[in-house]
Image (cartoon, rainbow, N blue to C red):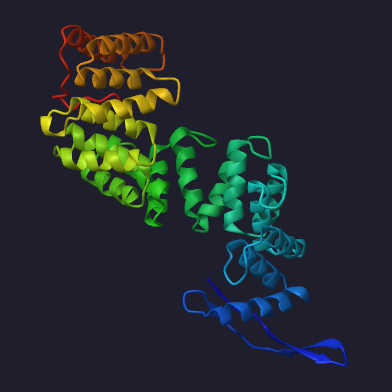
Length: 377
């Protein structure tokens, strides 16, 4: 970030402090500036801020907030954001809203955050318009109103805000506040992805993979999922793990599958831990099987939340891979019971047939091998 300010020199005269105003610019490039530059920029900004320049007040707040050029101090940041906001400075209004939204040196207050976001949004601040859209979408600090959410998200998106583009795509994909339109959802995901938004890259990859709003194209799907995964998106990493392990839509690549599952599991994503456990327990290539690792990750999934039928199914496979067939049968039977009681499961009959097949194997002291790239995801 590059900041500039009018330059003031402090002059002491007869015990009084006078200000000698020298108009000009003194830029701070944080990547190149010295500690002296940072200190002097804070002095100049503070002088500008004290005499009432709203932009300087907001910039000084940012310096305290970011700890760049000043010791991080959120109470000072809030003080200067408020001074700028009171003058109608859109950036100051937005930043003050963020402080209230997150409870930074003020009590967390979604309604007060909404008030400041609204002021900033009316002044054209795209980040505030996006934040306002999110609050209307979630019903935080204001009554939930999907039509208002779409209105403000669209305003922000049209100014190039990629987070707004992403959520606007979600609204079109789900038919929230607008008629459902998967093509329009795809278009907004694509716009956001072109801005480098990792979540949008994930959603765009899934659109290509499922053929939603665009003809199915698994090569493009992997391309966009990989972009998100390379940015550290755990959901994209996990999805690549499943895609490469199935070998149904792209060439089978078990080594790549393992790498992506491991990366996602390192972020404690439950689906990734489950996928990694299933991979270790049932992999068609015995060189990748590891009963101990399978059980470690399977137990991790079932111990930290109410176990889904998928997690129990994986746990059963992990027990079987370790030769613990009594435990495998018990886990598989529990998985089947949970599955039959879950009305939300798509194609439950197919899932039940697969579970029954595995249960029969475990009763005969035989571990399951996933030759067909099946998964419990």
